[in-house]
Amino acid sequence: MFLDLDSIRVAHERIRLYINHTPVLTSSRLDNASSASLLFKCENFQKVGAFKARGATNAVFSLDHATALCGVATHSSGNHGAALARAAKLRGIPAHIVMPSNSAKVKVRAVETYGAHIVFCEPTEAARESACADVIAKTGATLIHSFENEDVIAGQGTAAVELLEEVPDIDLVIFPVGGGGLLCGTAVAAKSMRPKIKVIAVEPANADDAAQSFRSGKRIVTKKKFTIADGLRTNIGEPNFAIIQRYVDGIVTVGEDAIISAMRKIWETMKIIIEPSAAVPYAAIQERKIDTAGRRIGIILTGGNVDLDALPWM
Image (cartoon, rainbow, N blue to C red; front, side, top):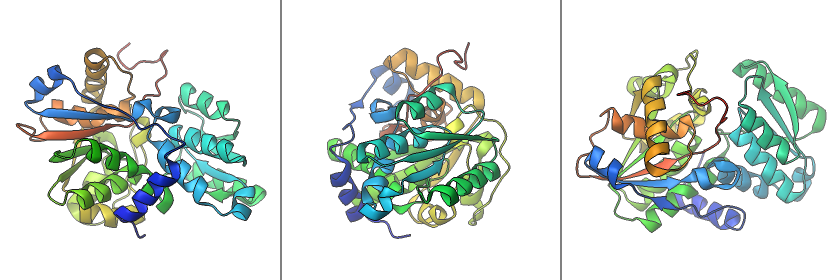
């Protein structure tokens, strides 16, 4: 996989009319608690409520006309599915989204809103991949993988470009990691724009394959336990791991209680809605897993799609 700052900037130009240029917010209370300057890039205010709109839109509008006519397909627990459905609707092509049966209701409704064809399956990676392969065989649609697709990853990297153009003096960026699409795109963008910047990823302790892989120097696939951060339940992508080894400075993990506490803290302090996966970076700061003292830290709040009838602290 080839990815550089130029390809990310091309992606940004391609998608800029279809996405929100999301704000960077601050909180003096959270700054004081962490002894740092925290700069939150609010992708919870993005189209479909998540950064995934960037990558999916870039991938869909990168397809040639003949390929696009056959439609697109993916498997997703929610945000990528909604993002792909929206991008397909914008281009006027079909979208087929395979979703696990335990997907959050708010994310299922989001996919439905954009008129995609939904296929439900058992909540396992094998079932998702099998169902998606069946859909592609029947429809001729093009697979747009949520994190093992070069155009998707380039699109995800545009959030970091916006952040660092707006706040160029950041010396550390922190992102959640699941499959690694966001991490790869943002790490390449950040290190290319500011070579001395540090890039740290955070993942749930119950889904710590990326941390294990980073420590061992080889990709490790784990059987996931439950984590409230549903967007981070997947294993790191195979082509993504090489990028992570080159550009990422460290990966730390946080527990379920820490994720919930951080999510609630941001809701209460910043008066904005974020989903559990978006809370993972701040959880690492709150748990003192990262040295933050005196630093200017960029954090991407990755999404805000939450089932309000099932808040984790209720």
